[in-house]
Length: 245
Image 1 (tube, rainbow, N blue to C red):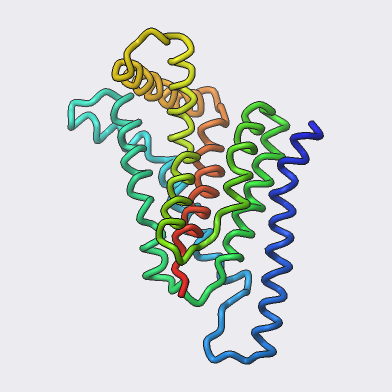
Image 2 (spheres, helix red, strand yellow):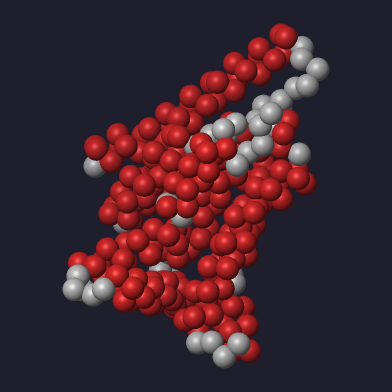
């Protein structure tokens, strides 16, 4: 437990450091009286935070709609729910461009958004450790380095490198990677193409089981992944693609 606290504690320390840096930057901006000011207020990050949570709630309530659409396409419930969720998550990759275009984030501080993201991540991992320590440890080990390194970049290759790392820790990607490792450990004699297909089938089933367990047995894994972990990931994605001048 202490090592876990040391790893997860870095998230909260990062939030405090960002809060201090934004306070200093706001004071310096007031003293210099620049014509073009950056909004360091907490209210400046609310629209982004609220929007990512709205789309997460929509996704949380979408499996039933996905299954209804799948009936018209002659798809099984397993295929329609998983493929619908995958398509929804892929469409969310363009959310930063929509937010930047319609909310005018050029004059708002990305550090404020990151403060919300790391605080929410810290609450998630510490609260999750009470119910499922192993899962909380996996999320902490995967997301703490991401929380520390995520920031806007003027360099295009750095921006896309950070985006690639973020894609690796997307909840659906992590699910597939862990299922792939389990498939490889049990069927290491399969050729790569069959192993990937078998891992894909197992991922669909695991995802469907989590949805059904949440609906019937009130299992919280799907709810937390969609309504807590995915919004944090979307905030980090927004930060990595934040427009800077």
